Amino acid sequence: MKRLLLDTNAYSALMSGDTRISELLGKSEAILISPIVIGELLDGFMGGSREKANRALLERFLAKPRTVSLPITPETAEHFAAVKRQLRRKGKPIPLNDVWIAASSLEHGAQLVSFDAHFSEIDGILRWEP
Image (cartoon, rainbow, N blue to C red; front, side):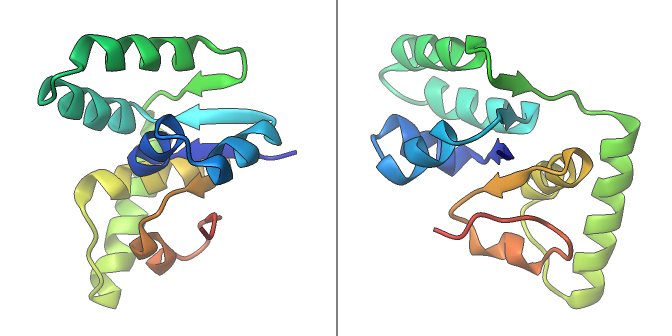
């Protein structure tokens, strides 16, 4: 079994009924979520007409026994700095929030579940391929 870290777009796909994501999560030992992802989701909820319903769904998801909300630690910051430097050297910048999400994935040895191909630019990241 594996530990999976959900990106914002993977959570959104899950909530939209994407069976690839639900089947993948069903086989996992733990589902990790970064506070960066939670912040992106909340931002999206605030801009929509279903904020209250979406917040309730997120709260239920976060309360599940296998779901773990990760902290941002000094180790996360070390991974962030290393990833950002690596991408800068490659000339392949990605959105800053995604650098933080990747850092959490690396810190916790979790497979990153995302539809964003730019994560493949990060050396050593375990990435789900849609």
